[in-house]
Length: 205
Ligand SMILES: CC(C)(COP(=O)(O)OP(=O)(O)OC[C@H]1O[C@@H](n2cnc3c(N)ncnc32)[C@H](O)[C@@H]1OP(=O)(O)O)[C@@H](O)C(=O)NCCC(=O)NCCS
Image (tube, protein in one colour):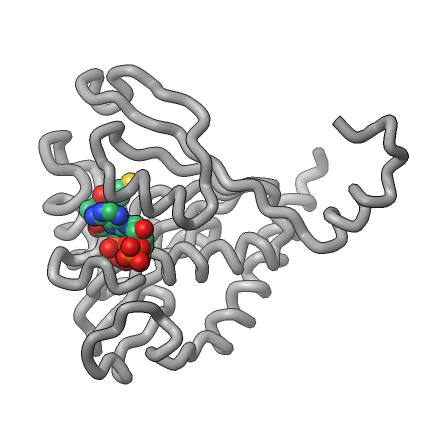
């Protein structure tokens, strides 16, 4: 592969991202389960100043019992990394929920996701996943991967609800202690779908 190709790809999803970032002003009523006035709440990209809050949420909500890997420095690096999107639902400068997606050549990896306990079941995680997925689709990526602990029912149900399916159970995946589940979601563009319909019947399996 030539040196120039990856850069072109990055440019493509960065473009896609900036289009979405500027257009993402979804009225709060369109997010499900809103109980009160969330008109000041926005989904968008994290700023470097949010790294500490996000890292603390990861420590307290995601990495419990496993050791703190997503330190403020690592989150800050992800915010600055052109291959990553750190998306947040925020109320002014307070992060209520966040998700970190890393984009590769043809796939994306949802690395981290958490919602503050008092803001769960309001559609925040689904909204973040949709937002990041839109970027992946715009960049014509093929698949999104994610993993979670086997005993994390909330996450497993959320991902299934968002169209992921479980592929593998990996025993003792987390720090050689806890089992993990691998999930993936394949993204098909309308063009790919119509290509499939044009295939001769014998090629369909
Ligand atoms: C998992 C988590 C991110 C879900 O966030 P959320 O904002 O509450 O999720 P949503 O409101 O978008 O939920 C969408 C759907 O997922 C399913 N779901 C989510 N949480 C669920 C739960 N606790 N029990 C059952 N179903 C659940 C439901 O189908 C839900 O739709 P509904 O509320 O209309 O029934 C959140 O519980 C969390 O932060 N957990 C701790 C951190 C974590 O586990 N992160 C994932 C690591 S891989």
